[in-house]
Length: 415
Image (cartoon, rainbow, N blue to C red; front, top):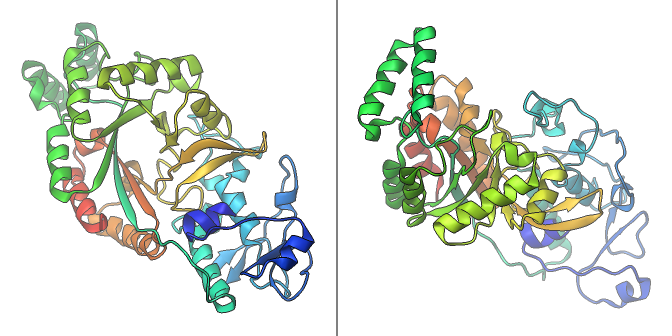
């Protein structure tokens, strides 16, 4: 309820379960029960918010003036569905607590989600519901005061591999050469040798260009660096390489820098704490923001681990290969742990776009056709449009022309 009223609509609310206090209140008020008390604004409650634990819930999609909705409330309700239970179902990631088959990296599959199956993944549905709800409230209570928020755009650069060839150990370089030869990747071999002779030519080393672009556009930008030991899934430059350490410190002089947690850290909280501490010591400032490797969010364990490690904000809530709002909202929210029945002190910042989701497009026009619609609705509800790009794709060749596409996205959506 605070997400809908306070974070999205900017309306302060208080709650009471005492009938006498409710009746005495002279200002705008809502009954959220099975039956209205008098002639007040009434929303018939679904059982979801009064339950404990997780249950397999049958959901039937209805329509509220062209917006999909669920948890129908009946004719007496002033709006046709329980907006609070429906919002909670999406934002809490209730469906991710239910039994499901994870993908090869242990992630919740996008095709299992209610939003994907019912074709509303690309819409900030909770925020759109809230906007329509406000219209109904103001018809009844014209005196309602609200603090309006502003649309925000944030570009996130995820750096899990800072360099493609440069600053690798001698053994890793020789191994890469042998692998290229065995697979007849002669062009890649040529690039590897060229970078070995002149490290500045590394294709992933686009940081100066990115920082200059961000200064030009003046949009909010965050860099998340992986700062982890070498492992099967984590193959960045060694954290002991001085030139890699200098790169992170130089970026931190111009932008927010925080931790892109390794795959290994998702298996060990001790490792997560160590990576956080190492990065903080390097940049000489607190590390409070996190992103998980491969966008792996295990509900609720990931957020329990992040809270224990004293992260305050996370930017992992989204899908790698599908555009859309994983939690149904474009407004940051505090994670609610259903198992513990408590709101955790970590703010979740959903992202709508990861660059890997563009790989299925052949032309930039197709990308903008999808993003334009998301931008319009996000701006309409004064939400946050967060996009994630990796320096890897920005430094690789593709028909979409990654750097050109990235520049166009910044200039098109940051205002």
